[in-house]
Amino acid sequence: MSRSSLTDLVQDLASGAIKIIDLTATLEPSTPTLKLPTEFGWGVSWPFSIEEISRYDERGPAWYWNNFKCGEHTGTHFDAPIHWVTGKDHNDHATDSLPVESFVAPACVIDASKESAENPDFLMSIEFIKTWEAEHGQIEEGSWVLYRSDWSKQIKSDKYLNESDDGSHTPGWQPDAVTFLADERNVVGVGVETVGTDAGQAAAQEPMFPCHNIMHGANKCGLAGLKNLDLLPAKGALLIAPPLKIKGGSGSPTRVLALMMSAV
Figure 1 (cartoon, rainbow, N blue to C red):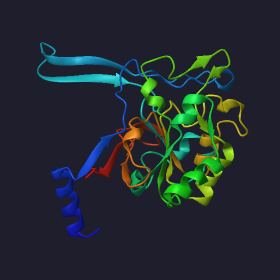
Figure 2 (tube, rainbow, N blue to C red):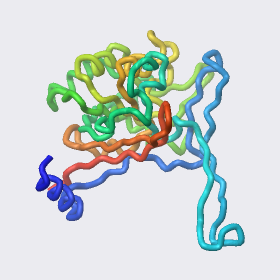
Figure 3 (cartoon, rainbow, N blue to C red):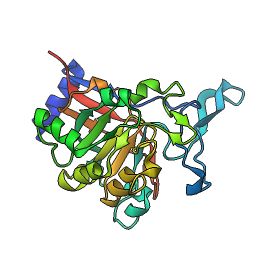
């Protein structure tokens, strides 16, 4: 990018010609967290909690600040390849070592909100992706693919995790669709509006948790807990999604922003 291009970007942001869309859910104690079936281990991800240290009082007369704690994969969050066993042997695969270029990339938004509303266990297929490509053009290498389900609109209700006796029921991916995106489209990664990048019933798929298994095995990344995907165009937005620089981190809560041209 030339100096004039950077200047134009700054001016377009200042004038409102380029709009910034926040794709991040507010992180708070009520933020839902992913629950794995007990047969996959007993480790528990801490829910988000916050504790006031001082607020312009006897504990600190001139400052307000808090302690907080949570698991790396809480709220709107970033999944690094090291997060899954299939990605453990890659180089530069943690939140502190991933190439920063992967944090800023074009976004392709595939709308499956109608299908997800009709069937909470809807799984996006290669055919569904190729139908989208026939209308909007092929997914470019180095893009984020964002799965619009409008699931984030339910985050304040029990329908967000949509749990029953046999686990959670939320939309996700057919395994071969993930392989297609990772291998044939060479995406940076995928992003979803659900609590994790896989379907609620992903433990019963082959392979189990296919998005995690295949995407991270291909040294790709993930974003979960996104919102406002209905405000983005199918193509044309630029995603900015850097995780916290945690040493050896498998992921982190992330403030995800999208830049897009304002409507004329």
